[in-house]
Length: 153
Image (cartoon, rainbow, N blue to C red; front, side, top):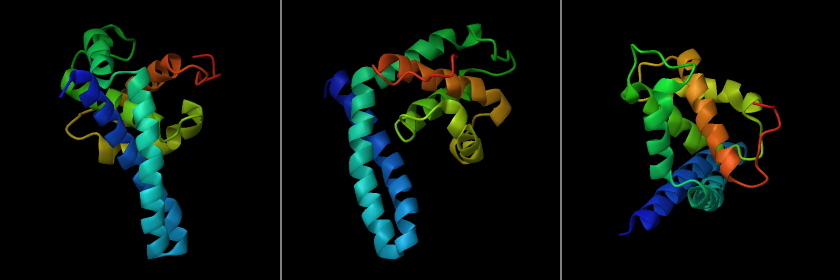
């Protein structure tokens, strides 16, 4: 499989999972059947969103960009390494499609609540990870025409 196709499949899959989780949560108000319908609908919508993000920002190129530059950022802590920061950048990439059209600052409290369950082996607490997640989020916004955040950052 070509790298481009693999990256689009990765973006589509990431979007599908995020969309399914959101859809299931929204559908749960209607009971178990609502959760199932919400998960399926959310998965389809999320897959499309993830694929469009993968078209604009190749996931492999995205990760390489940040791996090459994270040590030059103001939030970098030299007692941490790429294995700590990579999950934060991935979290920015993965969640952007779920909240597309919203400003980072407006969804940050929810992102913070979910960070500990998402961070894997990263040693970063939210206050350390926030800058990387935000940079990842804004990197995608700049790549997708019309999606730029208006908060001036």
